[in-house]
Image 1 (cartoon, helix red, strand yellow):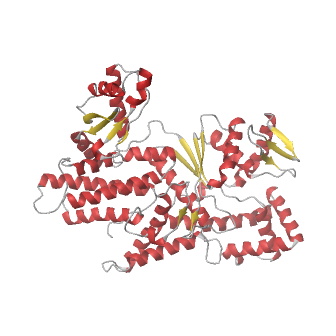
Image 2: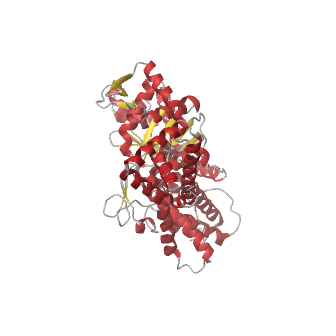
Image 3: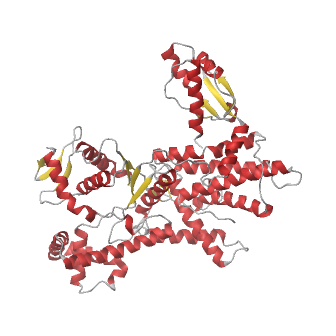
Length: 565
């Protein structure tokens, strides 16, 4: 249900009937119940243009509003606001329709586009650490959201698999005269040992660089060993993705090596367009207004991240046909992407109608406000963090006697992983956030556990009722009106979150919805003796639609629900 679109159409129709010239203005949710359900402030915006008093304009609009359908009444407030109240009968009908729809009344796009979402991007030859958590969670949620709304989403995991570290690893493997079957079980330690040798031994470092050249020139033996490292690294990543419940697969990997053959073509194209300039032996693109150039080829002929990113952009726009390309990458890379996007557009690699966006995010901090580290100052492995989340969740629910050990374990995984994901998604993605176990595993506040508890509470109602629910939905009081209206806002929230790439708009909505339902549950009894059958059925249907909306919202966030808590 695109509630705002319906209201905007009604307002625009009133403008036409009143003979008033109008701009593309939008209604907004009212900030307080006494101000109605929505407000329209277009009269004040038009007063100067039309040379009329804003209250006079507002009254003219109200006089021509259709109050037989979506609206029950409209009133002027202040200098020219129009407060709008939705018609309870219309609300009830729309909620009833949404309840019978598997998509809860959320439409799919009339004009879907192809979207590439680039996220996660783990380092090869190392295990994933907490620095990869936010990109993975935010990117997966955005991909889920756009898919649900009807766009064709192509998930891309851009991994770094083409650099000096692989020459170093192969050289160390050969120096140890091993085939990798033993040492590579602990890839992290193997990498540390190889790096130590690289830093301490100049001859070894030279040999490692020679191997890089061999890899990039297609040496069969080196490529075989290189592939072994990649497969083991991706195996570690897939273990994390499975625990985390994200939808990245091996097929979604588009590594640096995938674009290797395109890099010379990128340089050639830039040269043909006359945008390349040599600076200290390097090939650069100087952008107007930027002092620092974009280096696309080093003096020794080597390529840089910018070169690969340009090749990827061209491929995604011209081959995949994407109309929106989203990079979910640390906010500190904003300058890099701003430059690369400009070069790609100015060079014609990406058409002007393609939206390029860097979806930046802040850093995960510990309680002291410092970047999240282990006690000895090392980087926290993501797999260890997720395992700890399950342990902490198990401690939270371990006193529940009506669960078997197997049920406790399943519940702990759902709650623990959900808590980590929701804590990340519930804040503005551009902000740093404090990682706090106690807060994220609390039954109170804007947490995953609070959402799951709200859903489970509704399921307990239906376990007690255990009969068919039928009849009409009746909006009997102000609280029912507010709950039903909030349920109908679901699609507007999803659309706004998709446009802004801001999952926290979904979590804020879910928190407000569950909080409002808890009040509804306390003040509007459903199964209590004395409640008439018609009222009972109506309230049960509102509860059912609330549960389905919570479940769908959490599903987009990649979080499971539980029927019992």
